[in-house]
Amino acid sequence: MKDDWTKEEELMETLKMLAPGTPLRAGLENLLRAKTGALIVIAGNEQIMDIVDGGFNLDIDFSPAYLYELGKMDGAIILSADTKKILYANAQLIPDSSIPSSETGIRHRIGERVAKETGEVIIAISQRRNIITLYKGYHKYIIQDTDKILTKANQAIQTLEKYKATLHKAVTSLSALEFEDLVTVYDVAVVLQRTEMVMKIASEIEKFIYELGNEGRLVSMQLDELVANVKEDGKYVIYDYTLDFKGDEESIQKSIKALSSEELLNLTNFSKILGYGNNVNDLDLNVSSKGYRILTKIPRLPLSVVENLTVEFSGFQKILKASIEELDDVEGIGEIRARAIKEGLRRLQEQVLMERHI
Image (cartoon, rainbow, N blue to C red; front, top):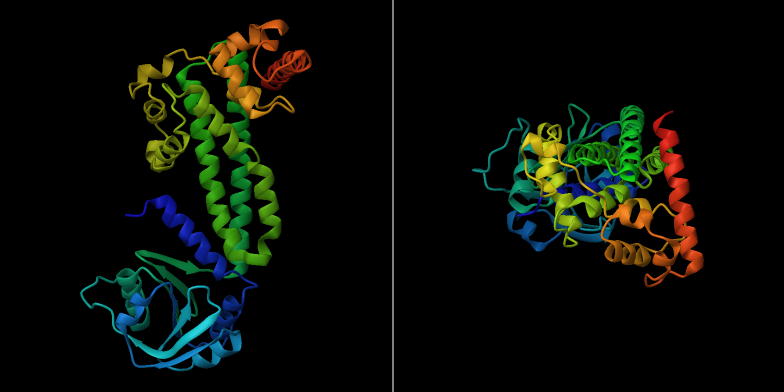
């Protein structure tokens, strides 16, 4: 069974195909303007033909004009998986009538049942309500007007800016505490919680960007700027603080992503995922960083060298207190790089302590 992450990615890819500026969206807009209802299937496999009756085989190159003309017929239009071909037109779809449907209109009820039975992408255009509804498996998504999406995207960007500012404060605080060796599980959990909140909002904005197509370039640029390094920092926090870490960062990320909105607010859930337990007292445990996140902030320091340092010194505090000679002994580090590491750590410490008091 596909997890929510995979389903989300599939929805994103489908929204890309329907984005403004694409030939398919142009054809759909033509049908909307003409107030013509339509049922369109994007066929990813041959299974769809098991529930098709009648119609006629076309197998012609897709064009918005063809879609518009064929949409005047009562039956469904079947497109190829890449939407570059119109395979059938005026086809009658006969899904299993025992499949439950929450839709009231015949066209939408058929579309929902076909999507559930086959897992294919079905697009239903309502003649009366003048909206485009997308069905994919058991998921339903209403394609909204571009101006409405743009307004929502801009509102989401403003929300993201506030959450990013909160995350920045939490990360700065964590960095300062790492230099002072005063980190608790609570401080780590707060950073991971804020990181996931930022990424969830970013994921929503990505949907808007896919729906906006070529109209979403500015929103996309703003999003890229706001989430730069957020995911990377979150990854290295996991590296630094997971008990008995065995390189399974992706499975830990998936566990965090699987948390519901309510579970996200409970910091003990993050403590449990990192291996410290889910008792509220566990949040007060003192923990020490391995040093991955801070060391990756030093310019021109390869990740292989960072890994060698964390293995050699077994903790950030030992790296911080190491002499130039001791750093020089680590594989991949010469005297020049050892001095650069010491200077880089000194500057980072000054920076985070100054930021914390601003």
